[in-house]
Image: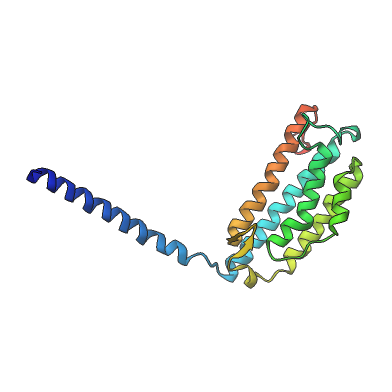
Length: 193
């Protein structure tokens, strides 16, 4: 090897090593910030609960806007019907959402399984309202100091921010699904009129 090639290789090694060290140095503060303060947890809890209130309201409004006979409608075989989406949301407000933040599930699993088979619009909407009230009471009772660290959710250690984004994303995805179902059935979401 000639002298120029050796110098070029050394320069590349030094630049690569510097990039690795810079990346490691910059990632260390992020790990130190994993635990949030009690005040930040309280603010996050309030913001997340406010978002859940909005999304719950939209599920209820949209569910009520569907004609009664559309609760068993599905866009194709193998996907959830309108009623099954509403029942799933009730089930998530009943168990997944509160337990994700350390709360307890509400209604027994059998009650949620029975609701999943229902095509009665009033029953499905009542199920969402009841389950949401349970979620709300569990959130309001949660001491923000218990929300500052990580907790195991779905097999992984997650922060409050990660849990809120995961749960919120899931619920908004189901809302989008129900909006698409509504549009296919010429039902206009009440909040967009």
